[in-house]
Every structure is written in C-alpha cells, then in structure tokens.
Length: 516
Image 1 (cartoon, helix red, strand yellow):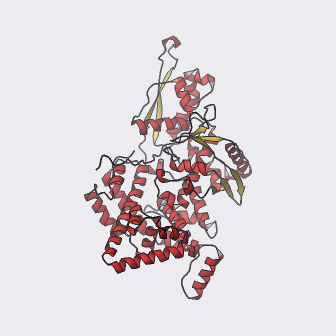
Image 2 (image 1 turned 135 degrees about the vertical axis):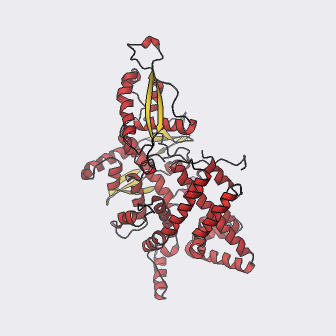
Image 3 (image 1 turned 180 degrees about the vertical axis):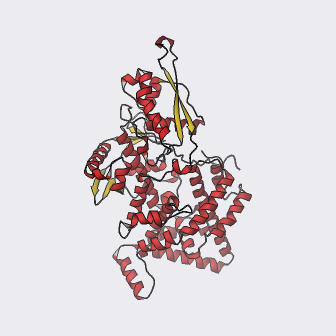
C-alpha cells in the first residue's frame, strides 16, 4: 500500500470538548446537555436530509453546500433527552427556552478542531451564533441556527459524535473528565495521564471555585468522586475511570493527607456493544422522528411504528443504520420532480393517472419501495460488509466499524457502476442510448442538476461521474438497472480481499487498516 497516500480521518466516538464560560469555567450541566443535544441534532439532520453533504469529505464541504438551517424536534423526545419529565411540559418548555435564549446571546468561538467556548480574538479563527430563534409549536421545538455553526460542525476534526444521550453524565464536571480520558486514549494511546497538579486539572475540567483549586482533598471529594461514580454505575460508558493521588510538595504535608497531584486512569469495561457508546437513545431517536416527519409521514402516530416495527434487523430490534440509509435515500428521491408539491408536478401526476400510469404520493412510495422493499437486501449486504471489515481489521471500535462499512459500500457501488459502464462501451450505440436515457431522466426529474450536467460541471464523461460516486448517476442506475444487488457485493468482497492494493480502493482500505 502506498506510503504517500493521504491519511483519511475517522471521527472517533469521543465526548465533545464541552463549551466553557468566558472565564474558563464549565457550563452548568443543563446548558452542556442542551449544547450537545442541539449540536448532535443539527449535524444528524443535516446529513440525513442532504445526501450530497453526507457523501462529501469534510475538507470538500463549502459553506454554500449548507441549505437548511431550521430544524424541528418532537417536544416529547426533547424533554426526555434534556432530562425533563413528560408530565412537566409547561415547566420543561420554559426551562428549555430559557437555556436556548441564553445560548442565543453567546458568541461561540471556532478554531480548527472544535467549538471551544466564547469568542477570543487571540485564540479563535472566528465565531458563530449557536441559536438564532427557538419556539415550541404544534408539539415540536423549532430551532433556527447559523449557517456558520453548521459548517463548523460538519467540517471540524472534533465533532459531536460522543454519547448520544448526554444526560447520562449527570454531573457538571463528568463530561470534561471523560473528555480528558478519551483524548489520552485516542491521541496518545495511553490509559493513564501524567501527574497533573491540582491547578492544571482544575483548568482542564473548568473548575474555578477557589476552595477546590486550593485544596486537593476537597477537589477529590466534591468534584472527582461524584463524577467517577457516574462512569462506574452506567454501562453506556465504554471506560471506567479512577484516580491516584500524590503529595509532591513536602512542605504541604499535613498528617499525610495533603494532595498536590492527580493521575487519571482509564480501564475498558467488559460489556456488550449494545450497552456502549452507540446506544439508541432519545436524542438520536428525536432526530430520526424529525426526519421522518419531514419526509411527509401520513399521521404522526405512524412514526413509532415505522421505527419499531418496519426497520427491524436480524436480531429483531430496529436497525438504525438501515433506517438512516432509508431516510437519506428518501430525501434524495423526494427531490424528483414527480414528487414535487408544486402545481405543475401535481398536474403531471393527475395526467399520468388518467393515462393509466402508476403514480405514488411520496411518503407511500418511500414506505413501500425504499423502507419495505430494500430492507432484506440492505441487511444481507450489511452483514457481508461487516465480515469484510472484520477480515481487514478486527480491532476497530464499534464506531470505526460502522464508518468502515459505509466507506466499503461506496467503494463497491462505484466499482460495480464502472464495470457496467465499461461493458456498455463495447457497443457505441448501446452506450449512447444509456447516456441519452440518463440525460432525459435528469431533465425530467432533476432539471437543476441536468443543467449542471449539460454544462459539463460534473466532468466530461459518465466514467468520471462514476469514479466520483456522483449520487444521481448511482441512483439512476440503481433505480433502473438494479446494479447493486448482493451478488455484486459478494464478487467484490473476494476481489478486495485478494488484492487490497488495487488503486480503486487502496486509500479507503488504508483508512480501515490504520484508522486515525
């Protein structure tokens, strides 16, 4: 494998660097929980609703790619994710609006790695507003955010891929303590820190209370002990943390009880992956329900049934990866003109019905032909991809394994499409017919995209589009030629294992074999 190949970054499921107040103190737990919930929701919904964004590398995303800045979340799930009971609706709405109003007034600083706190001209590349507007209406929390915030979430190294349900942290300083441990494990490949002076540890955790900063024993009892108990009692955390203490200043020795330094130690728990960091909680579910609602569900009461009964995996539980794929495919297909809500498109559907042609309302089409008809084939391919990933590297974390499967799926689809186009080229007439049909399909279903295609903005040939994984060409080939079935995946599973250095997938395999 080429040593000069660029390294592909896989985002790890670490807790985000929690925002701090302007004086460096940690946000209160309720505020940190809200920041995490909204950030995850903004990011997740952006990728579900915009297939072009989801298929781009973070370094290739531009701010102009971001079209949607308004998001809606079911209020019942917002209450649950943010720690409020459903019987306290009035109180919960007031409390959440108070928090979002405070976030609106914060200027969030941006650097090359993450959102890091209030704006500091000396340390940050820029700043953004977290919340522009917020309102509860018709059973939803409607939030408008800034385009710059979404751009930062989508393109930075440190992204909101940590615990889906942040409320498990419970204590104010627990998130920053866990972040410290994850940085150590992931960036330094260590399981314990160096000795940290009390003041240094306080700075990292955002502890500003003088009585804790000046007394290691009080810091241990009032800050560290409650946070450590959180990780011990809850199996959604992959690691249990502990501390060692030391007195490295003999002048402060008081009956052997003085503490001047701490060491943080992390130990991986032996628990099932279903209990670990990729848990399916209320935060993740709220974004999925919001996405299904945006697809045009016929009756909001159908949403739980769709999630809990119509996207089951082989284990009899909802397969969330499949549901996310189906939602993303739904938003992609929803752009087709036949499903448009404008009057001309509706007239076209009526005219087609008069001619005896089959027509669908969009949500019915999605539920039957994407969610229903694709499930078994998707699950078979997912199982095969899992076997392929494990053969290449069986030491990946759960999160890295999910990302690796997604990358290999793209690789195989591009290879199958390129094979198909190469076979068509053997007959000029056949190839020209395919090209013309694709052009007419684009013109009919995606006129704006067709204009770019006709102007050569996507490359000079269909093979160029295939190599780039051009989404409309992939979708057209899948919809009209059924190119990406299980047989093709089986064929390329063998090819990849036999020749991992093939240039068609060399870079993707390098990222899987040596993840960041």
